[in-house]
Image (cartoon, rainbow over all chains, first blue to last red; front, side, top):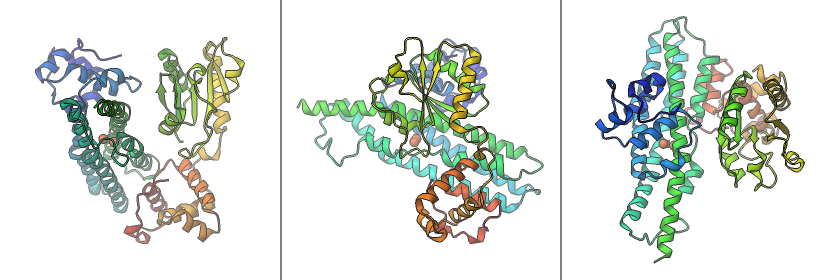
Length: 244
Length: 207
Ligand SMILES: [Fe+2]
Ligand SMILES: [Fe+2]
């Protein structure tokens, strides 16, 4: 079932509570009362169509938003992606790291095993940070430059040159950040001896599944929406230049 | 058990959903990438999805030459199943490894899918039991210690290519893809000791 603007926001959460962090990312908080999606978006000054496309992409991975989403301002999409990055780096990763640290107080767990988990997760954190930094420092500024050039009609004389960065490079080098997460899940599910009191283990595993789902959706937006959108911008710029 | 990656190229939403429902009832974990438009660059789509199985509407692949069965980016062979109906030409059918008649009833469809999956993966391949052979254990140990394929080949007197094949099998059996993941497995199973690891060896290379 697709989420539409007439639905009550409270019903959206009942339908799929995994959407909560996504909705929070727009600055929207709980306490919706009887207000509809449209009303809540208006209250928080959130672009309704953009909101609907993003939540539906997450809610139903087979939903293809391409045609609509590409018509949004690139800046809006980048803002959303950056908020997602922030959520991973500042909230989710520290939270999971905290849970793993708490395992040390569990007396029936081998301290060496906890250490192994900690080391593994730390190296995952740096892998994900590096991935995100590459995007924020290289890719997003590039897209903002293109957006500006298209808005002002300024001709980028140095664009494109053979060695210049294009979104094609990003598409090629955009590596997956889920392999290690996948391994971590399997190590916990299959190989690490579980403590008798497994509540914390279950929480960690649950968090890893949620993070993986979120990351998959994020990569989906980057590969299937961001890249085609920028390809289109590049083509327009080349055309504008040849018309000069 | 490794997850089955399927790429579905079919414009009909109902057909794609129906396939997912059927596959979901087979009891084998899978993920399905979906493509609802005519494909003009199959190689590109394959590189992204890395599927073991492509289930496609023949009409959506008419612009494609030979179907790639192997790709450097994939460590497995790619199989093709055609979604066919009474109108599908024999020539179009011949391009596929398997056929799935879309108008068949549910029971025959499930049986046909079961046959296809068994033909691709075998019934009870040892990959499903997760036990590693002596050779694989020894290679795993070397990987965990941070050795490269050619280092391992030299020490065990086998070609780097053979090492690579063993690595793929290890990954498939254990469900662990990265070097750091394999290292944790090796330590947990006492194949190596933590003290044997050098910090510099804990590189992040992936299989
Ligand atoms: Fe990202
Ligand atoms: Fe990314």
